[in-house]
Length: 315
Image (cartoon, rainbow, N blue to C red; front, side):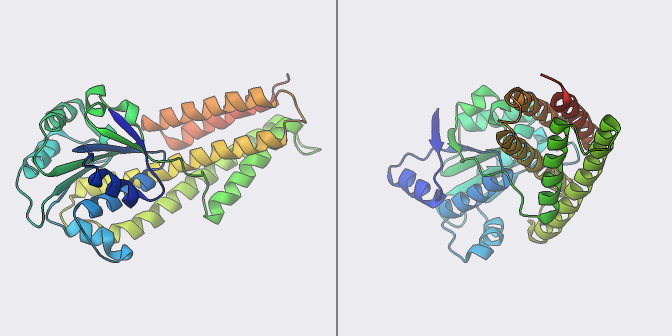
């Protein structure tokens, strides 16, 4: 199993691997940001299929290419079914129509159910000729070890966790101020714990609205360029994935914001490092619960109340 750190220019990596005749038949592309993973895969697939066009037309040209095959989660459960998997496997057995190579992209490969994963494993063991399979995920360790072992791994460098959207930036500033108030005891004249709890519920409500609004805006933009043959179930799953990706990026930005505040408060309270460690652990637990499709508002509320206990505790 080969692991490769992807450079900032994915085309350079592809050119080097192709020149050395070392590009594997199956590549597991992963990173913390699924949008970044998709962008890398799009560029890579276009290079493999020799698509030459303007950058703003690249995705459209790629999706129209007869030698590109995609497999996605479907329905609200966002599962890749065994039936869809077998259909894709049959499709990539045919010879290329427009060139010398075919490319198959499996989006969110960690969403395979057990039967689908086992079915696809056979394809990785005996890959079709002239076919490159790109497996995309943000959770590589949730895959079967037998799948990972049959792929060349492309780990994308971690992107900075931030949002350019002013609504998200304002929320993160409010979140940092809330944590700071917990540490200092809050504004003078306020009844401390009730004030902090009200603040937590306000953060939950704003978080929910921001994620919902951003999800609608991103979906409106992306839905204009979807493949014509995408099923309604795949559209539902994609729209859900967009919201989930935004939520995960928000959580990562929360961790960054927490670390930033902790660095600012290191000399004010010797307990800050321990509080930071406990808070990051609570955030990771929050992410795990959300991946189980638990209600976002409930899970975030639980995290903030846990953070309240951590940051108001006396050392």
